[in-house]
Amino acid sequence: MEDQLIMLNLSELLPSIIAISEQAGAAIMAIYNQPERWNLQQKADNSPLTAADLDAHQLIEHALQQLTATIPVLSEESDDISQRHTWSQLWLVDPLDGTKEFVARTNDFTVNIALIAENKPILGVLHAPAYGVTYYAAEGLGAWIIDQKQQVRRLVTAELPIIPRILLSRRHQGHEEAQTLANIAMTFGDYTVLHVGSAFKMCRIAEGAADFYPRFGATMEWDTAAAQILLTEAGGLLVDQQGQPLRYNCRETLTNGAFFVIGEKKQLSQWLACL
Image 1 (spheres, rainbow, N blue to C red):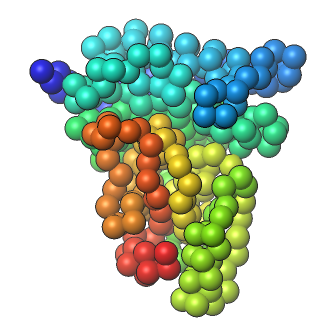
Image 2: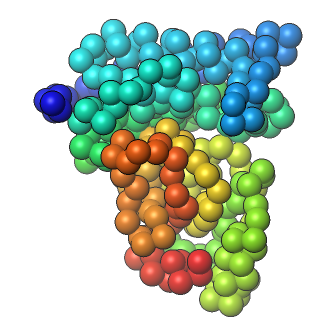
């Protein structure tokens, strides 16, 4: 039997989620600055795991349970999520998105917290502790950034410039990306490539600093949920190969297929033609 959808005031909820993400960020930075505390391990899928991942997970899970006791939490580090298909509403959390970036000390890692209702994200917070910035959005409330000076400004994606700015991962590039770049060259002519880690790629497009990000390699639902609502509220899109927004907690797997981030949504068909 499915749980009942709980009506929440998203504008009242956002400050608490921002605070939780920043508390998790502080816990991550305490360990980041002391490599002897990392306790680096390899998970079954060969991805890295550190003490920072686990500390942030425990902090976030406890705080969310205290805040909204009736909404379950699905985190990358959760142990038992066997009942997830019965949840019409859930918190979807990546306590440390970009653990490889953390280990490589690039600073490009984030705390991602999203609220999912009926298979779509309706609230998202991405905190970048090494940079001291927080991105946040909620359905109908716009997308925003709290910068290093604690100034708040609204995020709006950019209109496509004459020379498009393409984002690529530092660690996940293959034949599909190379072919897409060739197709972009045929469609647009010149382009520039920027290499950025973790969910920062989506944040960069939300704030108008880049235009297109193709992702063919495997990601998980907690990697994209918070960024998807951020992009949507900023005027962009995060979509699959058919141009449809990703949906959450509605398949047997939590692994995403290929997805694409687009800054100016009226250019959707033109970008999809480059794939």
